[in-house]
Amino acid sequence: MFNFVVWDVSPVAVALGPFSVRWYGLLFAGGFWLSYRVLAHVFRREGRPEGDLDALAVYVVVATVVGARLGHFVFYEWDFLLDQPGRWLIKLVTPPFEGLASHGAGIVIFVALYHYARRNGQSYRWLLDRLAIGAALTGGAIRVGNLMNSEIVGKPTWLPWGFIFRQNPEFSPVPRHPAQLYEAIVCGLLFGLLLGWWSRTRERTPEGSLSGLFLLVVFSFRFLFEFQKENQAPFEEGLALNMGQMLSVPAVVVGVGLLVGAYRRKTH
Image (cartoon, rainbow, N blue to C red):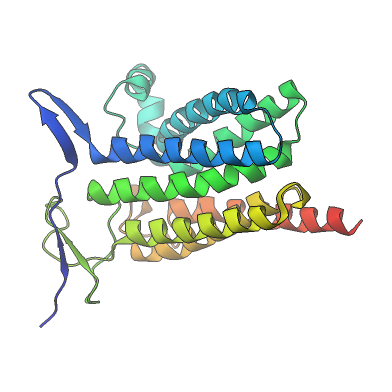
């Protein structure tokens, strides 16, 4: 007899009449707050003004939310975006913010950080490296939020750690891979690795190395884990690679490029 994990946790953390707070929102915000505290420590240890971090945090938060929402429509609901542009704009900025794409957030964050670096005369790769430490922590918290929502579930499995998602009738009662948890664990381990690397080298860290490792690890594992996930959109059925995998490939290439560039500059 198999003993699977029966996951029957309500996605709502607090409900007061018509007002409710979901675990996903708490974990999303909590991940950002913890990342901010970690980066404040990094800035202090490297002698950087913490005031710079406050402005940077605004760039990152706005870029994350806008990029994740916009990416969802561009990558997964392109037809809706073209057919109903008016409704799309309303849906983009109106709660509940259902549908977030991490690839979209990553692209817009890269652009926002480039603008911030040029405007403030800072090193773009230095910023990417420090933000990568916080991004790993936030990414892990968001994936735990997906677990609390019983969303982004995996394919059926008979492994003993399979989850039965009672809160998601579409996929219950078949035990499934806890794909959200897989990614959360990778992000947590990567956070420890990046923070430990920075702690040993600090300002001597080759610029581009931390962000390169982040992209390489996160999206390599994302590519592999997608094989164990249910597709996120109907158009992905029948494709050799789903949208998450296709978008992960260029992210891995950029990560390798950052790592190679970092060590070439160090050598010279």
